[in-house]
Length: 319
Image 1 (cartoon, rainbow, N blue to C red):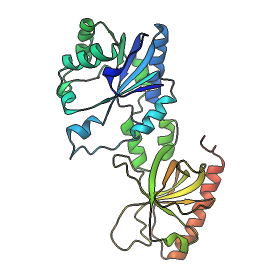
Image 2 (cartoon, one colour):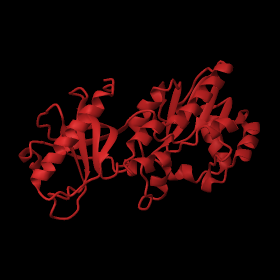
Image 3 (cartoon, rainbow, N blue to C red):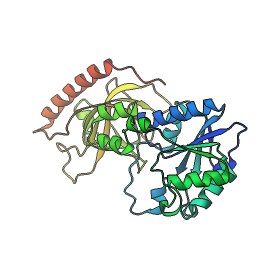
Image 4 (tube, rainbow, N blue to C red):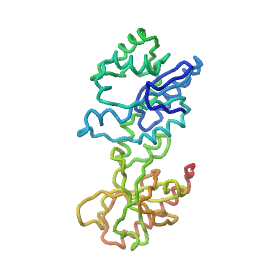
């Protein structure tokens, strides 16, 4: 897959079959759309192209009030799309100027003077241009002016892909990683930089790395304990691990700061300021408050046994 960072710099000699969207999560519904895109491109001996925007439009239009959570960073989304067999990904910068374009200006600049598609495939409810004024019908009319066909996603494709990024985000927020993984087609990824903690885990025989997720838009899993695959980015192989997401109610007596702590089941080393990548497999239990540290230690031992058993039946992710 070739990646282009501006629609106006894109060029290819082959006919272009284009679709447009955020494709956050690149879930099974998105993959069905991309399969249709690739099939249509093959029929006209063309190439499949996805146009997406970065940063997300809501962060530009409502910088202080966007309340946005995303499943993927732009780098994660790029990697996932690369796995689908898409020919081209265009990551076009979203700006206030772009948001103010009329539908005509939008299509003229991005399509007629940029991508030059032969076919554009979108859902019937696709909206574009200033204040989302552009409709499916107006895109058809503009296609007649600028010489491209517009095709609606077939009803059966839409019906069979009722999965939405919103549903996936809700499942992750609820800690339902099994459902999220089914919809995503792969485990949910998250990464964080290792920061210094209170080192209470060492006293319990469960040393943990405290992680700070620097991607502020990333959807965080709900509170609880999870079985995950973990690795130090660029250094180690994937290892079985458990992660606690929450406030550590048994030992946290000063406020309710949210934490993300990972314990490598095969042991680890100090790795302050390095990045640990996680792939969430399954939620083991709710976050709980125990009567004391011994009760917490006993539960952690049970968590570790359950996670080992669960991950033993999973294939380690490819490197």
